[in-house]
Length: 391
Ligand SMILES: Nc1ncnc2c1ncn2[C@@H]1O[C@H](COP(=O)(O)OP(=O)(O)OP(=O)(O)O)[C@@H](O)[C@H]1O
Ligand SMILES: [Mg+2]
Image 1 (spheres, rainbow, N blue to C red):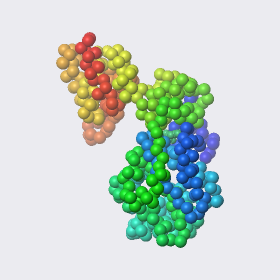
Image 2: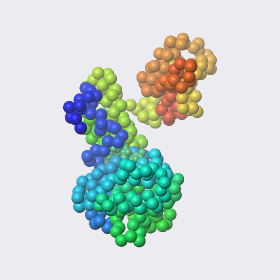
Image 3: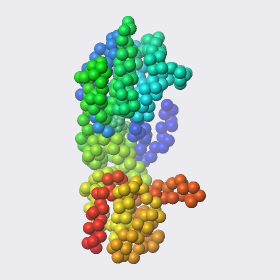
Image 4: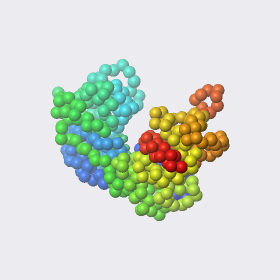
């Protein structure tokens, strides 16, 4: 990559946004040494050309399953070097849920000119086998979110992949890593499971606050100017994302707070830049935010809560009508259209609501839609009602 272009997009805090993107694979994983050791144990004999290895990785959303598979296969490929050439193929079965789609992905990785149609799965598998042996390569296939494939295909493709060398003299064609949030091993038939090896299962635990802080710290160091984010702020990010155990949330909070600080023209992120998650707003911060709002802002918010508990979004036109209904209920005169908009803007600044413009309704100009973080309406509706009664 052309290094002189690195400064493009760089800001007062951010030097390089790439480490904050979803598919960035860090050089090192934070706090997953034990699991990497386990993987190495399962692949201990992979340097032997006749050997294939299999492992299943399971765990909740954002606990690092995908990145563990990327880091492990990359490190393994580097480690083996010419001793055994690895061909890495990662298929996300959410995007390619059928047997034919998965096979097509593998084949096109091996040969980009391979025709799309006209072959049965047995033929495609044998063609994959032949190509690999012809090049003296071993395929390390990752089937990510494999539950989607299992739903469509039961265990059929897995069974075929596991049997690819059966009755053949040359073995060791494919090693397999399957990944899922669900305990997929329970769903496999006996014949597949026995070939898979029941003990080859790595269960990842959800991350705690300290691990999430460490992950945010790693990404901050990779993407930002030194000293622009203090340990305290990184701890706040770790704590706020801890309830989800999801590393993606920690990285998103980090990116979001960097942007916020830069928008404010600062060269340092402060704790206030770190957004609250919807769940936390409902539980902890919300009392002060909601109670301190102006009465009409509260009534607008209540109107929105009532609708957004049932529907994902509402147009601003409907929101204003709903607000008028709430005004009637509390015997208040509705404020002007302009004031209504000012309140909406304030609620958006507080990140209680989100807005986006759609131009879907043809000929009727652009419509503004409002939505809320999913857990919020249910969490604050009652509190708003009691605050309004108290006024
Ligand atoms: N131990 C870690 N060290 C560094 N980065 C991590 C670690 N664990 C997760 N991440 C990062 O957190 C994000 C989420 O991880 P990943 O995509 O691997 O989760 P997942 O378990 O596959 O989630 P899902 O179930 O939604 O597929 C990624 O950007 C990943 O790089
Ligand atoms: Mg994943």
